[in-house]
Length: 160
Image (cartoon, rainbow, N blue to C red; front, side, top):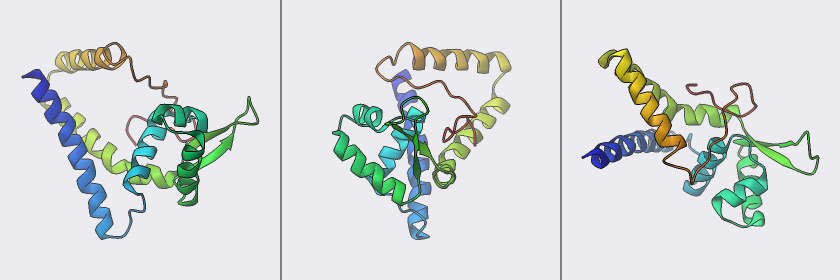
C-alpha cells in the first residue's frame, strides 16, 4: 500500500508538470525538446555541474553532452560560466528563462505543501519531513544531490 501511495504522489507531480508544459506548446512558448527537458532537469538537480560532470551523470559521451549543452545555450536556458578554480572548466548555470519555465512545477509543489500545512498537525509535518529526508539521504544513495546554496548562480531555491 505504501508503494502505491508513493507512486501516486510521484505520478501526480509528473502529470501536473507535463500538463503545464503541453499547455505551453499550444501557446508556442515551449522551445525545449523532450530530451532537452530531461537534460535541464538533470542540470538543475546537479546545481552548477561542469560539462564532464553532466556527461558522467547522463552516461553519455562528453561530445554528445557538449552538443546538447550548445543547443540549450543557444535557446537561452543555460549559460556556461568559467570556473574560478580551474579556468579550463565551465559550469552550467540555469538562466532566469528556465527558472520561469520550471516554476510551473515548483508552484504546484508549493501549493501541495501549503495544503499539507493546513491539513496536518505540525508534529505530523515534522515527522513527514524527517522521513522524506531519510528516504532522500539514506535510502537513495545512488543519486547524490548537491547542498543547495540559495545564493549560488543558477540554483533554484526550494520555492521560487
